[in-house]
Image (cartoon, rainbow, N blue to C red; front, side, top):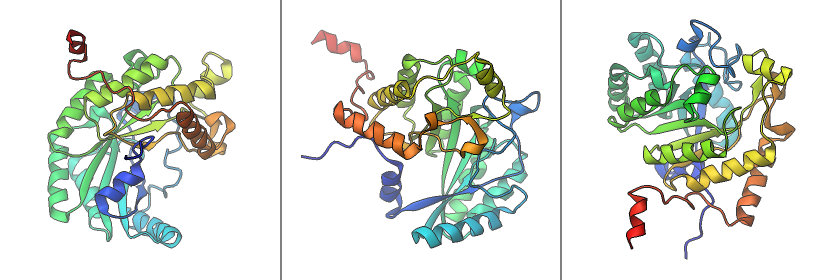
Length: 315
């Protein structure tokens, strides 16, 4: 009998797809976000770029990839890589500029995939057409990461996200028509969200047949609107135990076909006021795995709510 896996790990997915381990190389571009043009952006967003492992945005795409590749190759004997356009909103630029950046990455040796992180309200057909042509010309896979954070549109308003759930659904349907895999970012402990929101997030991602989910634990960066609210005591972060309960419930309601890239955020302590309850991410991950084993929990355990589930009451 096949052993029940706790969750579908991203590393396993990449091995299945490429036949060996594949590593992400972060790319940092000199860009911004549309949500920052008329204000300070999302309440959790800092002026410091989020890709702390990336090089400065002034360095060319080719040089960023080559310099990071040397470090990864030396440490892990890696041979295949994903060029990961990570910071801010990587489709929020003129189409010709966007095309030039993506082509530069695609032309680099040993790049098998290009992953583009962006916002749901920054997806247009013209940009997807460009990505399709680049994929065909350079024979590289394309994947797109969408920052949703929560399906609770009240919370999206509270954190000044600048879009609601409809924009996310629209972007997903558009991207899926090109068959590009979609990774969605979710934060399970935003102030104002509850266990119900965590479960509903899993259910909506499953109903939309998202390919990958990257789960984040909220960290509070310094000099952000959220940091001022945290220091003044106007918001509270749920306990570590509550987060773990939400995370397990999220996984239980998530389709077993969806890949899980991450369970916790990873950020240098010097850049944050709060991060992971002062516990290393790998210790937290060990706690989650132990708890899931104890509860006989696994991804998809509660995946029984689609395909007219209420019709089962007829039998």
